[in-house]
Length: 280
Ligand code: SF4
View (cartoon, rainbow, N blue to C red):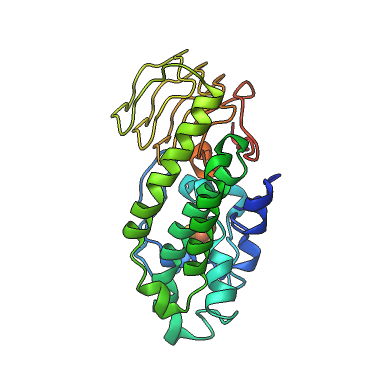
């Protein structure tokens, strides 16, 4: 599932992309899923802590090349942001849950904690790679160092991390950085759709350059040909959003899972370091 795109320096140094070959298949065991269809669908139900039936003895996926055809588009969309290899080899020292079943529960418990922290690290790293956010780089670096330190804790330390509190602390800084970048790259008035319910909205050709779409619900929205340059899409739900021909140049906080959950085509402008999803 994982890819290693041409990542900017900070992002790359922190290894914030999943590397399935260095993981004990944690997302395929720790996380629950329920049968559903669509861009984040699964063909079966699975409770948390139970290995998926397609997971091999080598922690590889037996249907990796055919996930979408077999109804597991949700797996094709997922990225742990590097939490899998961190928990497998740093937190638990390279001993997997089959070798040490007594630690399995704890391993599965801390994996989503590290995943959420790594997603935050990814956002902080992105702002450190944006020249327009330079006035905040010292603060961003401190926040990144503090968050990174949390991810390096013991299993007990990680189990005690209050992720919502960490997010609450970091979010205002990300907001300020977002404003700096958007003001520099998209001067003038900007659309404000923070947290908006835009499910199925008809926004074909919309001018959303520098807009705030933070946490917006854009499921199945029609954004064909929209100008989304430098729009802030942190946490926006882009499942089945139609991005054919849309321009996402410089879009802020856009992640590969968000992009992969959307629809697009060869005319969609994908910002670096993200890659065009194979199914587009
Ligand atoms: S289908 Fe493959 S990628 Fe998805 S949970 Fe199962 S083993 Fe993992």
